[in-house]
Length: 112
Image 1: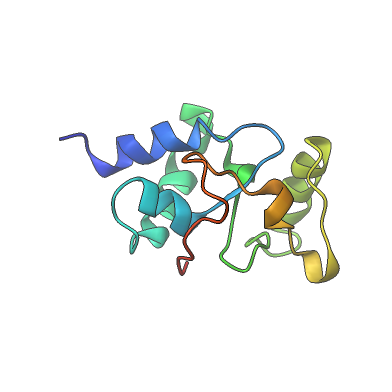
Image 2: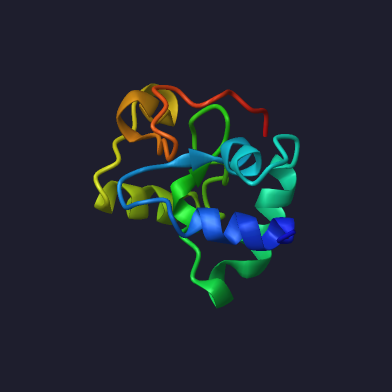
């Protein structure tokens, strides 16, 4: 059985340009829907060395989880460069921009 970390990294690398996924969605796709915080840790520790598209992962509220001044602006700029737009309160329209690898209309809701 492949370790959870390796599965998460593999899934993250599949998120296409212009699409986003939630931490909980990634955790669920990796086989543990309750491991959203572990996905955060994996991104934090592996993004640079594994060239993970960290900016394509958002929180369950469909928002950037970083605070202004702590990477928020960079993540927003990278997403906008890929065509992702932000609505009221910084929310991302999941009907247009959520990655759905299994072809489902709406992904299951998972808490971060």
